[in-house]
Length: 366
Image (cartoon, rainbow, N blue to C red; front, side):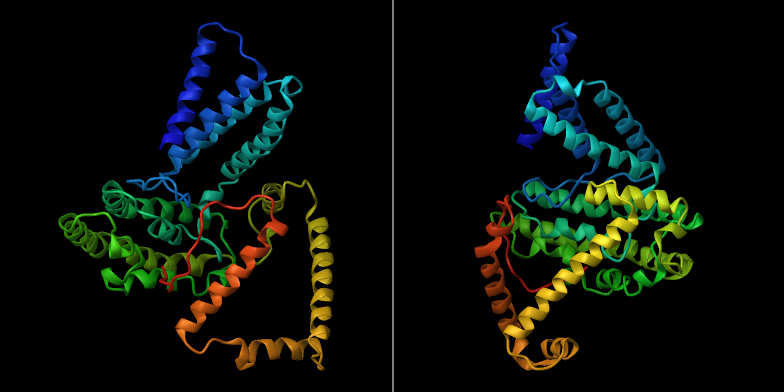
């Protein structure tokens, strides 16, 4: 919150300076623009994986009106950005400009292609994203109360997401059907679990620094909200996915089968690689990298003294008992050991490392 307040204050001071008639440098204009936009963006998306942010008391609005407003806002930002002469920026702000402009362009493209009409795929779904919040540190009484309020907002949020998915379904803008097989298990993990066993209840298990009276009250509220509000919303979502969405998704695989699929795919390449390359060039690059990795794997196989061919080596790695933990405790310990070995090597491969540490705990699914 202190960071957001600081960013907002900076933006206000810069804008007040402009209003007072003081000429703004190109640097000041750019900083005012991206500071104000970032503050707005943070407010638009109520929660994310940032463990330093307090827990929000609501979920984002994803209805058509909100999506149209985001597009209009980012288009306005782009107009203002293009009006700033890059050549007059300091070297530092030129770098910021070169990073920020493609970012805004990607956000605009995402809205124009209505990416929000496909909020679930084989990798990410809006309903499992909620679980990231449940795993965040809860530091205050307000965090727990806000989490209960956020769970109460799930039915509204799910209805809006389902509405967007229906719009995508109507025009053939969906993931391939095969990639959604089994995705309903992350929904039934909520619908079939006792409220106290749900991942959404995890924040209420320990509750450090919360009084016993508040713990009892909040736990009772959480159980009631999960049972009476959250689980019915997940059941409604499950019915939609099984009866309507998955049966109606496309049976094709290539993105070009979607409406304006080729242009959408190029926009995805630009967003995720920052490279204006043709899909064929990306594919060729991937083939070269896979060939290089395969050669390295063969070298490692030979170093171990394995006598068979590569398929036999893979079978050996997948089936030999020596590579499998015998108990849950052994699995946790081996995972911790592997993670710490990586910690010792991470700085060799990455210039910037996250400050937040991580823990290894038995898994709860959602």
